[in-house]
Every structure is written in C-alpha cells, then in structure tokens.
Length: 334
Image (cartoon, rainbow, N blue to C red; front, side, top):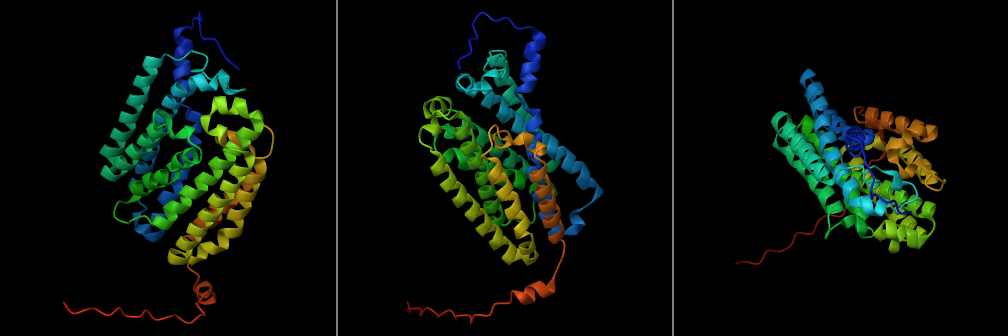
C-alpha cells in the first residue's frame, strides 16, 4: 500500500511527537538482554556486587537506550519508502511523511554521541567500544550499499549480533577484568538468530504474497517459509550446542535448566504460526502469558543455578570413557 506524503501539512507538535515515536522507546524492553551480561560475572565474583554497581547499571541502561534508539531512528528514516508498501507499517510516522528527514539525521547522531559519551565517562573505554560496535552494526544493517537487512541470512546474523553486544555492554558495566567466554557469546548470538528467523517466518507468512513481501523487504525475494524454518533449526541447534559447551566448561548446574530453555523456545516457535503474532513485534511479547511464564521461570532458574554448586551433579557426569593419551610429536633436531 502506497501512502502519499505530498501536500500534507503537519503542526510542530505533530512533528515533535513523530520524532519521539521513531526513537521507539517502547523497544527499550529489549535491553533486558543486557542482564545476563551483568549476572554471569557476578556469579563468578560476588564481591563485584556493590552499591556503586546499582548506579552504574542505571547509567548503563540510559547509555544503551540512547544508542539503540539512535539505530531505530535511522531505521525508520531509511525504511520509510519500503514501509509504505507494508500492510500495517505504512502508518509509521516516517512513512507518512511526518518526520523531518534532516532533523532525524541530527537526532540519530546526537543520541549516539550522548549514549557513547555517557558510557565512556562513567563506565569506561570497553563499555564505550561495545556501544560503538552496537551503533556501527546498526549502520551496516540499514545503510546502502552494504544494507545487510536486504541480504538473506546475513540480515538475521547481523541484526542478532546485537544480542552478544548487549551482553558485553552488561559485562563491561560490571567488570573489564574478567573475560567473557566465547561459548556464551556465541550461544547468545545464535539464540538471537533463532528469534529473528522466526520473526521473518511470521512476517512472510502474514504478508502471504511473495511479490508484495519482496517489495517491502528485499531479502524476502529469496526466502521461503521452508528455508526460514530450516535456518531456525540450525540456529536453535547451534545455540544449545554453545550453551552446553559453556555449561560443561564453567557451570555444570545449568544443565538442569535446559528443559525450561527448550520449553520457552518451543512456545515461541508455536507463536510464530499465529496470525498477527507478537513474534513480529517483540516489544509486545509481554502480552503472551504462557511465554512470559516460561521465560520468567527459565530466567529465575538459570539465575539461581549460576550461584549454586552441586558436587553430586559433577560426580554423576564424571567421564567414564578412557582418556586417549596425546602422542608426543617428535621434534627434529635443528
């Protein structure tokens, strides 16, 4: 559906409201993905939990929100011509022509500078670098000629890398001394890909007409529901593989939380088949009671298991196969 933006007059109040709307403050709920990055290092060194940390976490959420909103602003502006072709997104402020493009670019830069600046001043260099990486990935995702959101599979991978970046932002809020495990970061990345691929599947199924879907989002020209579901299986498998590697290496007790993780992923999978699914708008997932119940139970269980040590569990999983000795490689004399 095309929306004409010609000969329309908007008041200053309408434009100001539109500029607030394109920052998508309601999407700030996604910043909850920062929390594992805060909790995991605390489980390693509980002495890091101080009164000062509470203040640092509040500052971190402010900085992250500013950088994330900066990305949302440029997303709205650059996607406006395509959103006009979408059955529901054509009503977005930028698509309707309410947003002043020049002012939006200023808004985009100011929010990024403010977020990174606050992070650098109060939380340090590593936090600021992670915040810059979050912003740069938003540029790769939205700006031509790279514009990874138009490339199948790469759109999912580059959008979902915000997950481990948010984890790093939480991590560096707490400490820059303890190094985050690569296995945990990869698991977090793949679980983000799982969610994003299901969002794409739900969007494509909702639109129905592949030509319309391809006009709205270029990557849909190459996707099919089947190919997206195949990728979902890959991302879910990879996420659990890396989560298992992290658990076995660092915190075996987390194995007990696997059934709840699987249940949450299964409920989310089922939601993606519903018409008008909240999967298409993750900021509205709180309206899904079963999903929220499973998610809260999973988060609480994982959170508790991070701080609990169960020696009997380690004994139960003691290796029983003989260990093959490593054969020494002969060294030739020089």
